[in-house]
Amino acid sequence: MRTTLASQPIAPLVMRLHAALAEVLHEAMPEAGFGDIRPTHCQVLRGIEPGGSRLTDLATTARMTKQSMGALVDHLEAAGYVRRAQEHDDARVKVIRLTPRGQQAAETIAEIGARIEAEWADKIGRQRLEQLRAALAAIALDSGER
Image 1 (tube, rainbow, N blue to C red):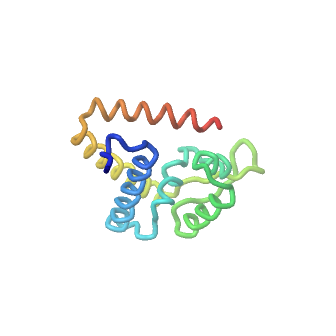
Image 2 (cartoon, one colour):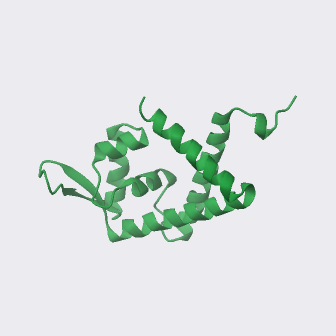
């Protein structure tokens, strides 16, 4: 007996949405002039705070090792999207900041995300989308404490 999408466990559905989002980013970023940006880079670019972010904070937020995040940042730095700089308050600490090209890429990622959200709102309605956002945020915040 085949199950409907509505009766499937949530984890595979979330994984399908993640894969669909990655596919859209994989196609849209080169079309927007960012052919060297992959979906994994998008999370990094969107996660950098306006004043800069520490590598350890980016790794923790992305739930990956510092070494894996370092490799992503190395790629983005070599491609001119980010730069490492000394933190204003503590010269021993390096922060990652967006370059102007990195800021353009982050804005493009945000625009793609907004388009996807608009499509989802068309499918399920704005109110249900906002309920989904709130539910996912509550789950994500709770799972970040583990």
